Each structure stands twice: as C-alpha cells, then as structure tokens.
Length: 462
Image (cartoon, rainbow, N blue to C red; front, side, top):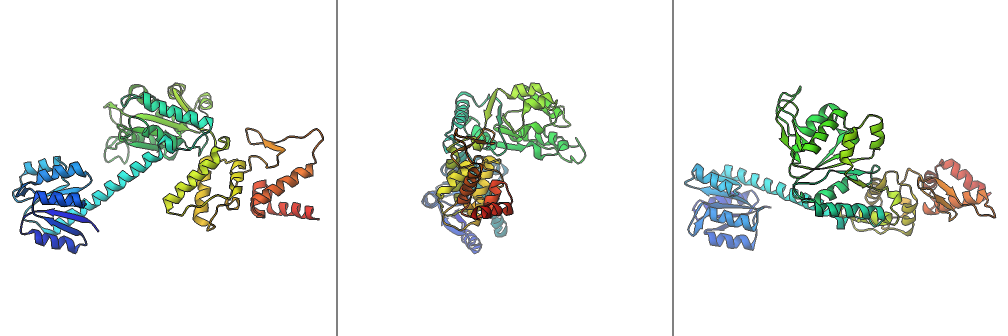
C-alpha cells in the first residue's frame, strides 16, 4: 500500500481523496503548507500532491523543502493557472510531474501510479548500489594470506594516491574463479570514482563482429541493422570505471583501438569521424598468459606494456592457507543472508576437506558447492559428506604424504622404509572417514570407480 499526501485547500480535494483511496492507497490531506510539512515530517509519504497556490505559501516552497528532507519522495505539482514557464520551473526544481486543474481523476491516478513505479525503481537501484559498494569495501573482503594482503594494500594505495581526473589502468591476473571481478569492483568503490558507474564487460561473451560497436558505440547506418545510434560501454562508463574481463579475447584491431583509448583518452564510434573524450578509469582482467600470447602474435606487445603499469595477481584458492575456511564461512553466511536462511555451522571434517581439496574452480567452485548444500540439504550442520566434489584432493591426509605446489602427490619415505599397502590403506581410511562411509563420494575423491574401491575394501576385510 502506497502512502500519499495531498496538500491543497481546494474543495475538489475530497473527490481526489476518495478516488485514490479506492485504488488501495493510504491518503492524508492537509490544507496549508505548514500543516502539510508537519504531516510529512511525522510520517513520510511516497508521493506528495501539492497545489501551487496555498494560503500560507506556494507549491514550489513545499517542493524545495521536501527535496531537501527526502529526495526520494515523488512530488506532483497541481496548478489552476498553469503556464509553461511555471511548469518548466517546477520540473527544474525536481518535481516528478506537473498537472493542470481541473483534475481528470483517471489521468491523475495514472500519473500517481507512474510516480510510484519510478520511486520503487529508484529505491531498488540505490539499494543495489549500496549493497555492491559495501560488498566491495576492503574491510569486507576475506584475505589474511600474504598474497591477498599485498593485493589489498595496492588497492588502498591507489585509492589514496590517484585523483578523480587521473588513474592508471590496472591489470588483474589469475586463474578462473579467483575473484578478479570482485577485485575490480573493490578498485572502483575504493577510488575517487566510486559515485560513477561500474560497467563490467566479458569480452569472451560478445561475438567478434559486434565487439567494436558494443565497446565503442556506433552511428546509425554504420553496419547492417544499425537503425539508430548506439552508445557503447566506454560512454556508458563515463565518470566511472570500465572493467574488461577476458581481455585476451580481443582481436588485434580492437586491441589497437583500446590502446588509443588508454594513451589519448579518446575514441570514435563505429561509422563516425568525431573524436570523443573517454572520461573513464580502466581495469582489465585475464586468466591467460599474455606474454605467451605476445610471442604467438595474438596480443599486442605495446598494449601489454601499457597494461603492466599496475598488476594485481589473484592467488588460487589452494594457495591461500587458512583463508580457505574463513572464506568458506564468509560465503556461507552471505548465501544464508541472500536467501533468508537460518545460519548453519560447519562440522569439524569440513575444514579438513576444504584444506585438502585442490579447488580447480577456486572461489567460484567453493561458493557453488556451499550454495548447493544450503539450498538442497536439510541437515542442521554442514558436513564433509554434503560436498559433491569432482576434482582430486590436493594432498592425502596421511602425515607422511604431502603435495607439491602443483598439487601432485609427494611421499616422504622414512629411512626404515614404508609398506605400499599401508599407504593405500591410510588413504582409503582417511577418505572414507571424511565421507562418513559414503563409498561413491570416497571413490570420486580417490579418482577410482565405485567398484574398484569396493574391491579394495573387500580385499582388506578378507
């Protein structure tokens, strides 16, 4: 139900009240500016309808005061002697609409409905922007390992030392799923451009023949099907940050255009000779080895030099040590909040599983696993058996076993020797314990078929 406030001393106001109330709105009525502002301060309204001529003031005075106290409130100015100049002045001061008397009640109801829709959209947009900004604050990101602290320190330094008018392009590198997009948002919301737009573009998802027009815009008739001028992502990000993910997927001609933007801060739309200014901060990301791409002739070396001024290296999840379980708890709580679910603790074996798994999909894979568990499992506690992992374990749990930095199994053999069967038995016992006896899951973790694991278990039992 919407809350409306009518400020008008006209006798027609009674009919307006009844008409709007029939539509399910709660409508309050004040006959003077003083009474109307008093009611507004006591109980905020979604839409205020105010007469331009009041006994103790004007509708414009009410409009100005409401815009100061609550800019989200929609104000409709009503006038019996409306002129074009009066209407233009009201709209310039922030009125949502301007209506002439006598009022057409059906038309007024439509205008009020439009105002309510606009208010809802504005409120939702503001909520999403504030939520995204809060989630991108450095204080809200999880990372205590040396690699992540180094990344955070760089982001903070850039925010402190760069101005709104100038800032370097930042290259974010790392495996897929390591949080490159999250860090790009952190760069934006910790910079002087935080109040501008953050525009994210996945270069791998746009067809090559459309990429130039999508990024730089196009004029009408520039290509088949271009029936109107098209604003590109560079213009959309005006005053804010343009984040190009998967930068290695850009063609060489587009790389040359991007280099021009970075060096001269200018660009041209497709089909236009007009040079436009690009007032943007640029961040790019890739999971590709750009040096190797340069050697293959797939990436411009001069562009790479330009991108390597500031490089943020996102470590894979398997190298983040104790961060892993802290990050899992953070993601679990975030997912619970998003879905309105009650909090659920981790069982002790979850830390062992998270520490031992290789996480080829990195943070994205961890989040997907937790989201699946929280939505599909009803147990009050999250246990290792709930994780359906498809990759290999990073390290076996036997204290004599370890792993190299690449995740390959290493074995420390004592001088007195070590029985091969004992190693296999230890692996099987520990994995079965982690999976709480679930043979199918244990087989997946060990990289063998279910029948093969059953055979080994039966052989030991014999």
